[in-house]
Structures are given as C-alpha cells and as structure tokens.
Amino acid sequence: MSSVLSDWNDTIVALATAPGVGAIAVIRLSGEQSISIADRLFRGKKLEDQPSHTLHVGLLERDGNVIDEVVAAIYKAPRSYTGENIVEFSCHGSPYIQQQVIEACVAIGARLAKPGEFTQRAFLNGKMDLAQAEAVADLIAADSKAQQQTALQQLRGGFSGELSQLRDQLINFAALIELELDFSEEDVEFADREQFRQLIAALKSRITTLLDSFQLGNVIKNGVSVAIIGKPNAGKSTLLNALLNEERAIVSDIAGTTRDSIEETLNIKGVLFRLIDTAGIRQHTTDKIENIGMERSRQNAGKANIILHLVDVTDPDQSAIDWLQPFAHKTIEVLNKTDQLAEPKDFPAPAIAISAKKNTGIDALKNLMYEKAIGGTIQTENTIVTNARHYDALSRMMESLLAIEKGMDQHLTGDLLTIDIRRALHYLGEITGQVETDRDILGTIFGKFCIGK
Ligand SMILES: Nc1nc2c(ncn2[C@@H]2O[C@H](COP(=O)(O)OP(=O)(O)OP(=O)(O)O)[C@@H](O)[C@H]2O)c(=O)[nH]1
Ligand SMILES: [Mg+2]
Image 1 (cartoon, rainbow, N blue to C red):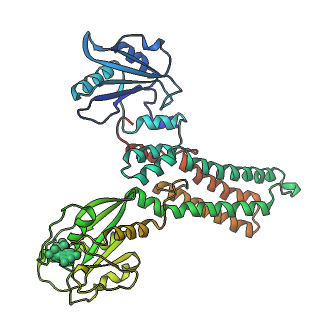
Image 2 (tube, rainbow, N blue to C red; image 1 turned 45 degrees about the horizontal axis):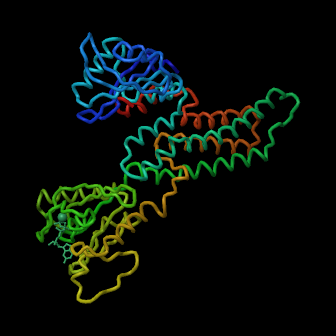
Image 3 (cartoon, rainbow, N blue to C red; image 1 turned 90 degrees about the horizontal axis):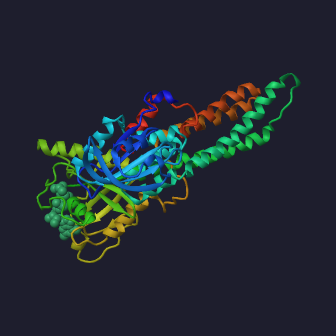
C-alpha cells in the first residue's frame, strides 16, 4: 500500500490553521525528520531530547535571523495523529510569518504537504480506518449539528465497529467452509448450514437498515433542498423572507417580480435546508425572460427534495399547476394570505394555512418541513450512512449475500459458496480500507481534504 505515496518517507509541512491573519497560526510538520528539522530552526531546548506531548517556548531562526517567538509542541511516533513524529509550531498569525516558517522548514528538507496528506498518513499507519478518515473531512466541512454528530459518530469508530463485527462473523463461517474443502473426500460439513442461513439473514437485515439510513444521511450531509413554487404574486418571495426572517428577496405586487431563482440556507433544528425562491408559474406568457425563469422553476421543482406549493387563497383563479402532479409525494400544500379572509376557515389536513406577510403559521410550516425531510427524530446513536462510497459498497455486499443465499438454495458446494463469501467480505473491507484499496479511490478521498489536515 506504500505505493500510494512514493514520497512516503518525506517529512511534510503545512499550515494547519486557516490561511490569512489570525491571533495564532499553527504550522505542522509530520515525518521521521520533523523533530530534527525543527531543532535546526528552534532556539531553545533541544526538542529531540524532550519527552513526547510537551510544549516549549523558543525563537525560530533562519540563517541567524529571528522569524518569530513560537511554542513548539512535540508528539513522538507512534503517539500522534499521523503515527509519525509531529511538531506543531504555534506562531503569531501573520501570513508573512506563516510563509517564512514554512519556507524555512522546506529549505532544510521538509516538503509541502498535499491536501489530506496528514490524514492519509494516519490511515496508512493504521491510526484510523478509511471510514474514519473520511469522517475527518466531513467533520471539518460540517455546518449543522446533524452533520457534526453523524461525522463524529463515524470518526469515533461507531460505523467501523459495526462493520468489523459483521466481518468477523462472516470470516468465521468462511473459515469453516474452507476447512470442509480440505476434507472434501470425506463429505463432512463443519459449517452448520442452518446456522449459516440465520447469519446471512441477520447480515441482510443489518445491511438493509444501513442502506435505508442513507436517504437520511444524504439529507444530513447535503442539506434538504426546498423549492417554493406557485403562481405569480402568490407570495413566494414573502415566504422566503419570512422563513429566513430577513428581507432577502424583492417583494412587490407586480406579478413576475422574481425572475431568477434565489437560494438561501436555513437551519431548522440542526438540519440544513436550502430554500429556493423561484419565478412564478403562469400558464401563458410571451415574455422571453419570464419563460426562461419558469423553465428554471420547473427544473428546481424536479430536483428538490421538498416542494412548497404556495397558493394565494384570495386568488379567484384556483386552477392547479398541472406539471406539479408527479411531484405530489414531495409537495407540501401551503395556503397563503389567510390574513385576507373575512372569517377564519378550516382547510383540509395535509395543507397548511399561513400568512407570509403577517408571519403566522411559519413555525408550524418549519416543523412540517422538518418532519417531511427527516420523518421523526434523528437518532445519532444509530449509525447513519452519509457517504455514497459506503452506500455503494454496502449495496454490493447485499448482492453478494443474496447470491450466497441463492447458492445455498441450490445446494452449491462449499468451494462455490466461498467465492461469494469472499466477495461479500471484500466489499465490507472496502469501506474501512481493510482490503487493498485502489490508488485512485484513495486519491479521490484524500484529495477532497484541505491542505494541513
Ligand atoms: N395580505 C397578504 N399579502 C401578502 C402575503 N404574502 C404576500 N403578500 C403580498 O403579495 C404580493 C406578492 O408577493 P411576492 O412575495 O412578491 O409574490 P411572489 O410569489 O414572489 O411573486 P412573483 O415573484 O412575481 O412570482 C406582495 O404585495 C406581498 O406583499 C400575505 O400573507 N398576506
Ligand atoms: Mg417572487
């Protein structure tokens, strides 16, 4: 696996904190030489002689010129994030100083780190499995509570632990069946077929739950897209503003005010919603720009996870927008301008009555959107699959399990069953990186990281 990094033995350096001005910037070195490189720049105690996990104040100098006063933190292999020697310099957060420190490290033998290279090394050194490494990237990118919680659960090994249990059970059986092959002359069965069937059924049910959780996982990771659709003047832009609680979109009594879609994010109970205000839909128009806007509304409706179909209750024309029909399953009917009704009226249940202008019914609508997207509460103790790569591997694992079952129905011999068992194990191992992982896959996974992580 070391072929993945031809420059595996290099000591790498990168800015670990966000680029730009800050109170403090952290520059991180990892690799066998990192402490000796640090010692050549650091005027203070000899870092090489200090115990792991200690902090030291000193000056950083290059060719006799002081760059900054810094704190050096040292972590000795294997007790570090990457499993290698790590030095972290906390310096003053000016971009000039950051650059000087990094250049000084490079001048005496360190190399600039590639995106995700620290975490990739952590993976290659067995500090975490692949699913955990991916969770690091997710955690850094998390901008809602739900994202942070699912990523943290995965980082702490919740998902990996579950997979390795499934894997152990299957390996156990594979071993017994393979043992039978050695005794094939004698026609013995070490692996109780009935027990094996039960195991496969249990695995299938567990994998199904994980696969099902992906829908929710996807929502958590990418946010829920919500298209606000309705006729001109229904109050779509007013509703967007009411949901966001700010005057984001232009509102006017001129039909056709919104021409292009506007997208804004909204956090409801820790889940990210992406609201899209669209151009109003009318049956006939010759206005070229309006037509383009309506086409865009239609596309947004198709792609959205949820559609808010906004209807103006005071509009004498209550005709339906016919192309919305196929999206009924993901549509919430929202009746607007109920403040204009002479007397309160009850509307049939799934529809919700609001006044976007007077801000009534908005919280109830938010709850409904949350329910529709999440369907009950998120239980982050349960493993939620958020990663398409994992989903793919689990689906293939499922196919292999079905093939095993079919094979047993057909009374296939052990050697044939083994092929499918090995395949199932392979897909399971792909998730955690327990099997030889494709170079390209690793490249894609770690390429998505920021430099310095
Ligand atoms: N009385 C009342 N008026 C509303 C309500 N919501 C919106 N309006 C008014 O309806 C008019 C149209 O509102 P917009 O939000 O611009 O409507 P829109 O659906 O975005 O319209 P287009 O962008 O043209 O498709 C404005 O004059 C709003 O003030 C409401 O709940 N009650
Ligand atoms: Mg509008």
